[in-house]
Image (cartoon, rainbow, N blue to C red):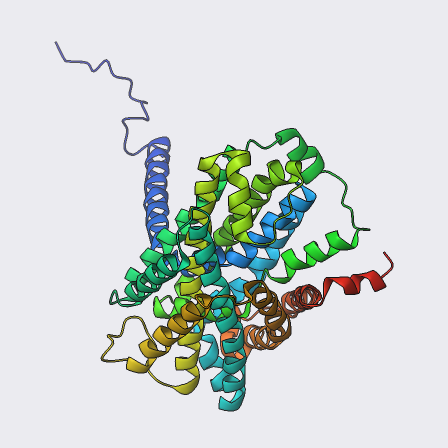
Length: 449
């Protein structure tokens, strides 16, 4: 008897020549390709991650921590919506630097020199130095304050930090230095558990903070808005991110991922600002304590929120200040090399780029020593930093907008006129707010709100 197959002849799942069988294989193939591409893109993103994220977390420096702490202590949760509104401003401006770095593979100072001449490049770099040097004193003040919260003499905290900053740049490569900077960045996230330990009132946070009324008729509140928004973009941030992008050897294919890196950093730094506001709103605001320095904030937190909240605040303040000290000093060190044409890469050995490393060492050494001088007016210096920023930022933003909008420089990647106009308007607002912060607060009495 002839053997007869019991299997249906129209079984498309087994028939390799059927239309449905081929479709299923195509779908499986597409999913396989999609998964491989997603995995590759994800792994490649972690290679690109760094310049944008690091510079954004560095923006949450000692001055920003103090501003956020005072904001929460004076006005509770009211200034949280402002921190959210500042995210797109941060992203729009800083993403320009990452694109310029990826496409041209040149730092900010080098591009200014190439397209506008060595005199303009030198002028921009010298003005940057004024901001950088003042900012470094602020960062070492934050380092000293973090130790003093627990009675550690500033000579120890500042001295050890100086040695750490030396170690970072002498690791032998940009990537090693960046990995250490990323550790500093992630350590700053201790502000979030510190805010939780402060036991905030979540009902008030939502309905009086996120969706509550804004006392825009109050002059003190307007001044704090200016203080928070005016310092959101610092000149050294623009220089650092573009130079770091170049030193990391990012290129045209990395533009989108570099912008994603910037976006993540923009969101993260504002989350940390919100965490500090929540922390002081839940404690100092309730106790009617208005601090004037970061040390005052940390010492006031301990009896109100417990030693864990105080300890986490001190750790966050220290790591944020240390990270900012590295970023700020590298911004000028890179810019000087780009402007005056000597070797300026962390991938060079000391013997290959002596002047580059010498400038970095002198910057952090002198600023650290100044902080150790008894009776130095650190609060006044912090105000001066805001003043320098407000007056110098227009110069840096002007060059940034001109470079980012030039098709001769970026070609098809050049920003549109609408984007340039939007960034210009936002930049002008930031400059005005920065100058308002630098002026004596009493001048607001002459304005009728």
